[in-house]
Length: 237
Image (cartoon, rainbow, N blue to C red; front, top):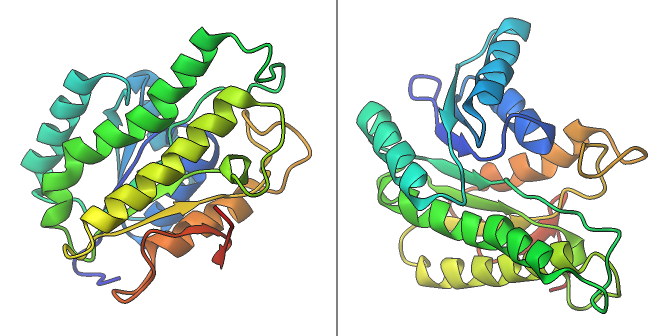
């Protein structure tokens, strides 16, 4: 990172969990972090706590409801007016680890809600910020996915979450192929089982999950694109 020109990094769903930890580590490095959250009050609280805990770059809370196209357009306009570019987008916002369901018993409204946030949310956030990414420095898009979406290893259970992550992986491939000549690297990352509100107790520390996301953020210009990784190691689709 060029200390004279910190990266502009947008992280969705960043008021808690892995998104918050990614924001914290980037802020500690001196990056400018746009801390996106559906609830602006919670985003502001998270940003204030991060800034109070240690010195760093900048952390700026912004309302980013990834299911609301108008809100995303407003967020993109605000970011563009202030910074004129985005260097990294981390599509982290996700919902519904539906351990209580199977494909045979699924409430399809629950499945639709998961698809709306976990896939379409990442998709329309990317489209809203794409003009700013195109003029970014070493631009990267990192989609926070899960091995639960791997077709090769998939079994039963968590249908809304798993199917949505499979679709997010497919979106990653499509975006990477269509942006191949743009200099924008697009990858999906599985943080692993992490002790967060969604992951529940017993998982690995959140800092370890964030490390895999940071790896994808920090890829060199000749780094991979269109891949699916956990801790820098390729996973099967």
